[in-house]
Image 1 (cartoon, rainbow, N blue to C red):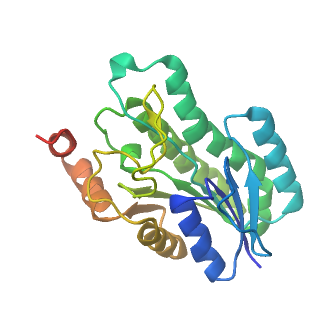
Image 2 (cartoon, rainbow, N blue to C red):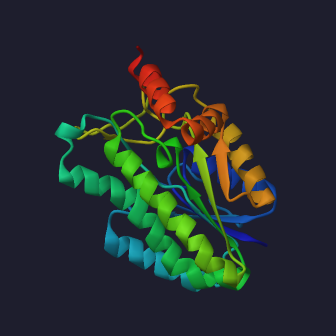
Image 3 (spheres, rainbow, N blue to C red):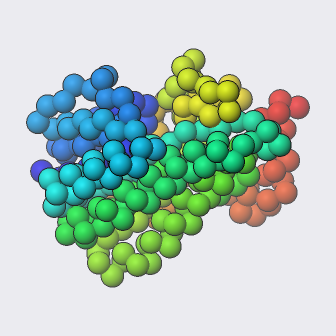
Length: 252
């Protein structure tokens, strides 16, 4: 039985990915700060962990690496968003966004590196349109996703020699927490809860696209029509993309 480890695996896109993999015969290890909604069984292992708690994170990852010497797929899905003007963005908030969206992912990848090499497995980083393009009033979020993409694109060159693939998926707006943002005073909120999103996708639909791209071995997987259009327009006409993005998100 193949083993997949998913951070942020208890809800939204992470849970949809886990459900789809289990339907294909995989064992899924889901890591999340709240796993109470999961029903563990022989194919689903739920590990509670706040990834911003370094001691707890390190302990969970060390145990995970020991318990599963071969990991076929690691999905770095845990994330938070942050919406607000840059002038009001405190350094502590900026760092919190990076702790979840970037540092938790790269540390998980580092710890599980031998396990993925043993299985000749795959690193799958869940990025965003904000990982390759600007996004209005989301400086910290876009910066963290740009960093995530840079790290995993670079890692791909190292891991190819070990038979390990590195893939990146970039959804646009996935409806994972609509109506339940748990938004803090600093503008941080659960992913998929933004009120200014465009053409939201259901997590199950996003998961199907991601897993199809995973099976094809696609290095980069734009998820949904907004992501596909954004990737193309930003690549050929960045100023046009910025104008369209600002117009749509500002509602002008």
